[in-house]
Length: 72
Image 1 (spheres, rainbow, N blue to C red):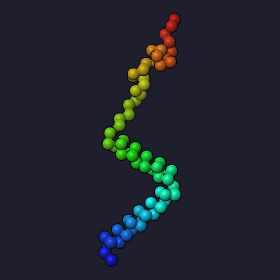
Image 2 (cartoon, rainbow, N blue to C red):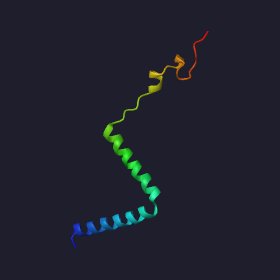
Image 3 (tube, rainbow, N blue to C red):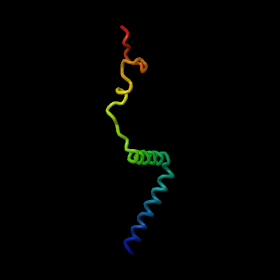
Image 4 (spheres, rainbow, N blue to C red):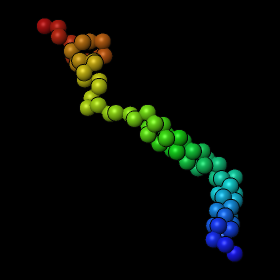
């Protein structure tokens, strides 16, 4: 047997084993899909995490966000 044929048989067997596993563990398969999709989206959109966006856009003393009021 050639190497490519052996590799193809191994990959097909692994794929069939995964399909059978996914049929019996559908909830885990859905979680796996969600994690893969989230990882792809994060790498594609290059999410940059700031230090604290809430502090810069919603100061504590504004009253609108339930922070401290400056009533004296």
